[in-house]
Length: 415
Image (cartoon, rainbow, N blue to C red; front, side):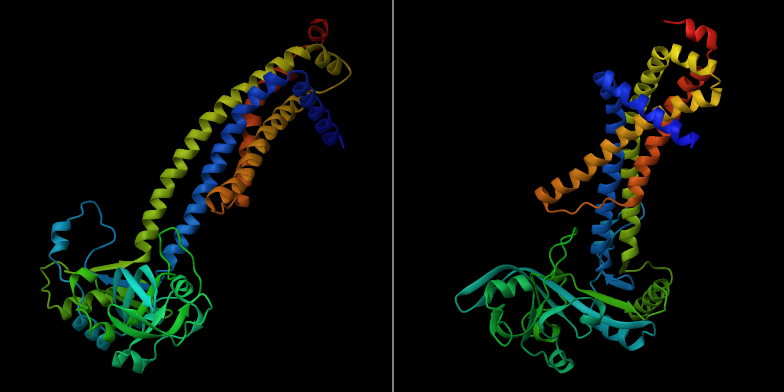
């Protein structure tokens, strides 16, 4: 009860200070408000970016190894001239890996051709991406269908003229959702639509199946050289459940060196890429952004803290005679100290809550303007409130201590 009474009196004093000295108090609160806003806005933006990028990265498969010519990242120097001389993955490599691997659950040989035109009668769709893949593509990549199905094993092996297309392409060619069974012209050949991917939308990395067209690799083999370097062939390997990715990667490295007859004293002429490479790079990037945002916010809060301390010193000066009366009536030092300390914390909390409110309203503005959903996690709200309390304690402790040590007789006699 004593604490609640003390809290009520402190809140009333803080409110009175705000009411009587509006401009002075608001200018002092501005620093805390801007600081909390900056810190929470940066943290929320980073969390949003991290979540969206992580979703994009996760689509690549957490338990998949990509055998390619070029590495995604490199430690220090990036010797591109050396990577340039590497051969691309060949069908021979793929077939041998399939035959020898003990850790792979599924494996797919894939090529992608950008900016192609899909035709149906008088209708055309430009900018489609054509993917020519082997049978197990649906096991190494995750996707859903809005209609139809994936290739059968016989269709893949015989190179049947069938196609699975993205939702946007199907909608543009067949607004009535009757794409299944229709024939479209791709790269000069007529193919039958057997499936349509579910609507997916673009992610932060630009990956989407909405404009993707899949055909069996053996069918593409009759039209183009699927092992040509300009199509950037890759082998995607998904490990068996329960087998660590490092073990899958280790086996792939050993098998590729064996298949390509690379001697022990020579470097690999292939790259093994995995999602954790991108995740690690994202972690490094976001740590830098978090630190930068924290430093900017702390400078703003530091200015706000000095402003709050100034208000508290002025408040002690204006209420010196009241402090003297309270102490003459038996108020203890800790009562006076807590009274001013709680007042400082309340003032900082007001600034922090204003900053949090600005961030919250900002999420709706960003959603409306850029159609990006900003996430405001509970941890960021706790950080904002906790920081406000900490600044209140730090900026209010010295004025509160001076107030608690005043001599009651001298305090009453002051004007």
